[in-house]
Image (cartoon, rainbow, N blue to C red; front, side, top):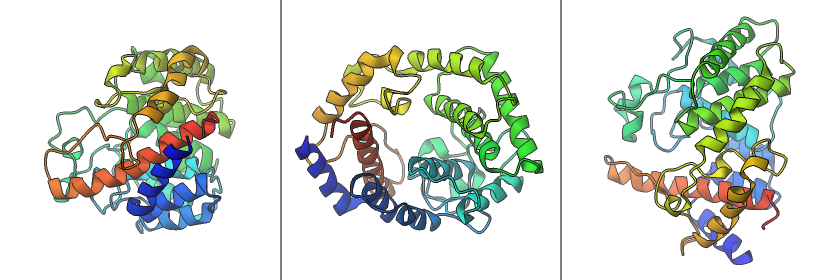
Length: 305
């Protein structure tokens, strides 16, 4: 196991962005949370939103809901919850501005993406469905947890959360694992905020337990080569409400991670851009650093390293 860790470390030290290097040090080398926040702050724009290829598949420097969502995920990853901090206040200002928002959803794709290198799925010409609650459900939850309770923004967050809940509860299981992520985060934020009057959290929780069981790709033979849903996307500890029903396949992922590491210390990236090959070569290394961190965090959480 020490060999897996060492090879991963070597890749990070040789290839990671400053932000991912800071994340690595925070999780595995007693690094500081402040270093992560400092590196993250360079991706934040004056309007409070995030851009600049924080999400490596879109190199748009302008603020977007998806890039801003990823910033909230990094804050959560390092356990940062100070609502008075400029990064969090900035995010709330961006969400309160009405930018990239239609009154019900924050836009998953923004038009200025087309002006910069990007993956096909972030183009306005994308055939994919980008009008669902990814990332809106998560952003609504973030608002409920961090916005002032007497603010208009908080009321907006509650309104959107109720709409998201009603939409989900009145349909079948979701096919998009990213949207499932956002509903899980909405549930967690609402619970953490003690805002259980917004909607029936237990009903959402019960459906999400079944949803996760449905969403995980059971054919493990395709995990290394296809863009699929592994247990670690949803399960972060034995205490997770999703662990018990998926214990066998969640435990299998430990061995999968260990045995599928590449010689350079990274793991295979199971997607690619068909355009902008030079930029994709750069983004691929950024993604490899991110996947290394997430894979080793999964192993660390379950005491496998």
